[in-house]
Amino acid sequence: MHLKFDSEDLENLATLLADKIIGKVQAMEGLLTVEQLAERLNVPKSWVYERTRDRTNSGIPRVHVGKYVRFNLSEVIEWLKEHDQ
Image (cartoon, rainbow, N blue to C red; front, side, top):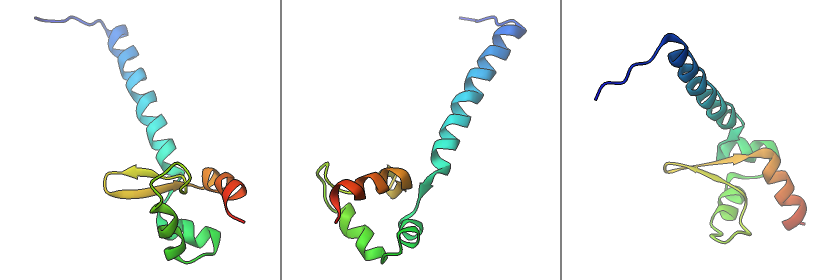
C-alpha cells in the first residue's frame, strides 16, 4: 500500500505535528522538581515528599514522568489553599 501526499498535505501534517510537540514542551516547561518546589515554597524536600506519599486524590497534585515526580506550581498553590493550613 502506497500513500501519495502532495506538498500541501505534507505541510499540513508537519504543522499539526509541530503544534502537538510545542504544546507538550510548553506544558513540561512549567513543571518543577521536588527540589525546585521545595525551594519555591521555602520548605524542606521532606515536606514535599511526605505529601506525595498520599495515594488518594487529597495528596499534593503531581505529574509522573516515568519514575520522576513533577509539580505544577499553580496547581500546588491552589491545593495548599484548600488543604494545608
